[in-house]
Length: 405
Image 1: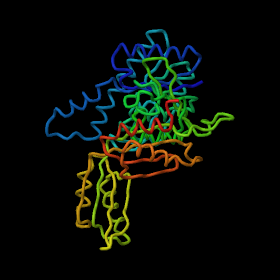
Image 2 (image 1 turned 90 degrees about the vertical axis):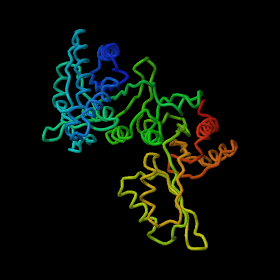
Image 3 (image 1 turned 180 degrees about the vertical axis):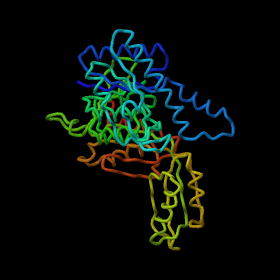
Image 4 (image 1 turned 60 degrees about the horizontal axis):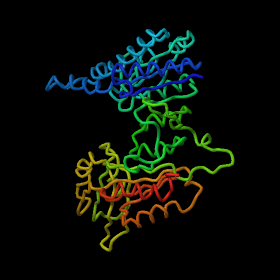
């Protein structure tokens, strides 16, 4: 098998941890597998590099310079891991993103991968070497160094796995898999053996921090089987795969996979909006033009005076920007409420079962929790509730769907 392993910042946080990663890589190699390892910068290094750049007060670094600076952290880690492996008698070679053939567009600090030329990696693997790739980075066709933005090392690992047609891509972090909900909120949360790409995407977008959306989206596109697991123990992780691979012969698909809580929510309510075609379109176009991410939307029925109320949610750090955009006279009043959270029920099983939504609403009603907004998709039900009830809502829903079993 060809296995791509990715180790995050906490997994390679110091020399002792890099030593432990080397042992894990060696165990995989000794089991007869070819191995490509993608690494992040050692924990804290990227923030330190940013502080160095900010030291020069009044000088706004060019994005290209920042990418040159920030990409160095991962190159240090990849070199150290390669040195560690070679010192133990295992042939290893370290590559920068550029050397690994990761080609990106020229959108510095948040570049997107457009292609991977894996020739050098394949040649090294054929020679029996362990390949170590600096994550989070690539290069333009002109050779300029770029970084991939938040979650970039996960993205690097998935892209490399796809390009090399790896059998498995293991994402090592400080958690040992995907749980039915946050164990800090509900101690009875259960680790999942498998979850589909679509379910993982929904959970990630709803606040689950195990994997970045971009990585899961790319894994789905490239049909890369992902396993997320801990680098601090040998527990089995969670496999993230296609829906067809989730099914077990003779068994029903799990109804619900997880409950997510997103605390980064604010509700904007516009009252007295003229109720006629094109008004809502104009409002949301202005928000889109300012790159404000609108999530849930609700519009009430018309009032006798020909107006309506329009509500929507945005991330908390964008609520004032949203207020400024919509405060243009199109509404009689605008209210902002940051004391709300979004709780979501996610599961591909709801495609073929009725009563999922009513169970969610009933379980919250039984706890005296009022639902302010609701949105649904084929595999998700999301509800906005008061922030003080967020964790109670998670526990109530987790119990209602018997996810601890």
